[in-house]
Image 1 (cartoon, rainbow over the protein chains, first blue to last red):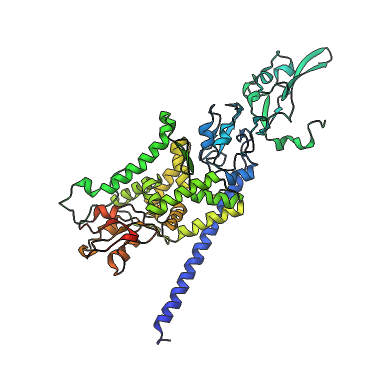
Image 2: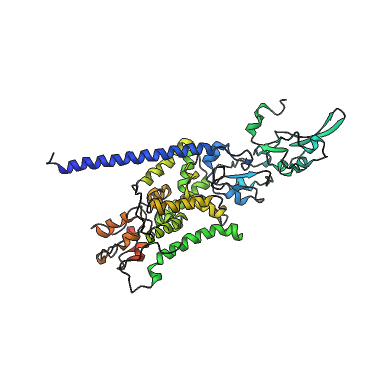
Length: 222
Length: 286
């Protein structure tokens, strides 16, 4: 063996090279697994954080959106924001909180036009087809109209497609006559105008992700 | 932040004024802050020449640009890519292929200002180098970003990528983004010398690969004049790239894609050994 010092060096070098490679691969795999599990957590977001119109389902959205903020820049009403680092939403992804600034349902949908990726679906050309969520009257015990505190029609007046997405249904109960704001889920786009304008301190009508509301059963199902 | 990032040259040249000894550094800072300024012109002054951020942007409401590494991850994640994103990524990739892949790191990336500041301070404080992971670790990390995007279907690296997090924080509102800046600063100051940009950053690794054949390179043109003072090795963020060109007998071109074309060696060399050169048309002296 002493006759072949170079080959022995070569073997030692190769061993060292392989060892370092295995080390690096191991360390990096660990980092990758930690990141992947973090990514799994980052898939969840607060129910109040709604995605822009045309957004792909959340799983695909988080792969397609490059977090550039072009949709945010082209939103004329400053509705959309980019999640900053530390918020409970994947950082850099766009969202809006209906109670703060709702979607104004622009006819030309500038946010979708601005998106350089498939994250906001270009096939959405009619804003009425948007599905950012669906409004639900969550405060049946707080709504001024239902409880009879006053003749409030805040949500109904705010709705850009009123009489289609929201109607005020007359109810009679005993001697009491009152109006119930009623959302028609097929028409509701989840723009959140109703939630923004609700007069009760904690909105009695809220936009929720459609998956939570079980729209798939059919809107006529009682 | 824009202070010189090196220890003072061992042999101070007397013939050149200070600004000439810092000219590439000054130009680099002007480029870094200037580009950031262009992105901030919109939100601050309402002048929308540039919209978006380093991940993707639109210039003058016409030209789309996008980061090829992020677009690649997105394509792997969802299996689809738009022509806009592809065009933007092509323009950026073409530009950096031309001027040197890691020109992104030293002339554009805002994290470089932070890590240069950390390096300046750690030199002043005479801190030991600390953790020195192998430089190839960043390549492994870059591979991890691509594999993770493929397997999870999500842009995993963008959850923690300091490059985009820092720039987005500056352009779209800081939020808790300052913690990322502080983390990178402290890492480079206390944990590892030139740690982030020099050993770990997968974005830099990607641009390094992009620049392996770039025409614009530094050349140790007058290497016979070298007095072995070591100033270039001292200031270079990737000192391993210098030796083959300076001390070898082969090409004088710094061919490694790790070189960021920062020009710091040109600045500090008291013997004017280095200059920028066109790699494929370079003629050695004599």
